[in-house]
Amino acid sequence: MLDLIRHKVANRLPLQPNEALWLLTDADLFVLARLADGVRRRLHPQRQVGFVVDRNINYTNVCSTRCRFCAFYREPDAADAYLLSYQEIFVKIAELVDHGGTQLLMQGGLHPELPIEWFEGLFREIQQRFPTVRIHSLSPAEIVHIAGLSGLPVPDCLRRLQQAGLQSLPGGGAEILVDEVRRKLSPNKIGWQQWAEVMRAAHTLGMPTTATMMFGAGERPDDIVEHLLRIRQLQAESGGFTAFIPWNYQPGNTELGGEQASGLEYLRVLALSRIVLDNLPNLQASWVTQGARMAQVALFFGANDMGGTMLEENVVAAAGCTFRMSQEEIINLVRDAGFTPVRRTTGYEVLEEY
Image 1 (cartoon, rainbow, N blue to C red):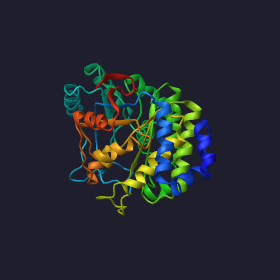
Image 2: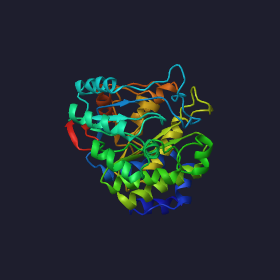
Image 3: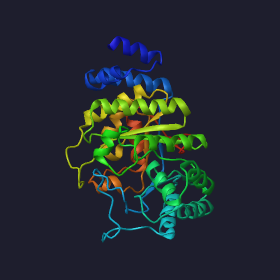
């Protein structure tokens, strides 16, 4: 099995589900790491590791989906429910710009009273006030929700948001792209086909996106493999994904509860992601959930990017995970691992090498 897999990886041939499953469950960890590192070296021979200076503004915590794994959402009548005003959002973006930030990640709950006009007005104002900031915002679930509230087909909703200033989509809300798993974790959320529909529509409009996976919440190894193969197929169709970001479920303060996946499990999933998704250019290490040292190790398991500096992050923090890293800490971490740190744009153009 291993010899066949090595041949396929070396010749850029797609793995079969049983081969990917064997790598995830049975392969020696360091064999897996070497395979993943080989793919990374092929795609990024210059040994650069990127990061973007960004802020994640969670514009509301009111959400009608009530995902069992989420510690962030609130009912509309909860004492600590909130919706940020435009002005409050502008203050946060101004702070981002003051820190040299170039990427605005905006995600929130599925608020029952925010139609498309609210977002169009916001994005137009952001574009006018902060022209150097790229609006990389709204997950597929939010897009479907906004389209439904506004009586629009998803492609029309995306087109209007793009015209207002939305430039790219984060891949949040993917969890595991297997509906049996999704029904257990978040029965009120969109299915995997709807998630894929949004991504296809965005790519058709020339709007790049990322893709994600949250694992460790009760799925089977087969489900992880299925998720990766579905992302690979979508990428083969459109080529619109710029990066893949896997992270492990954070059980603190959630209805679902349970145990957290170990660091070794994270590294196995990360490495498999790099091997299977060799048609997708970038793989991010999740220091937000793993911490600095594990993110550094991830650079030897296929990752070539550290994601964002995250001037602000509230969703994962609500589950009790509060790792923080400054830009200087990220630079030093990457350099100490023997790589060249680079500050990049959302589209992975290099702005500065350190």
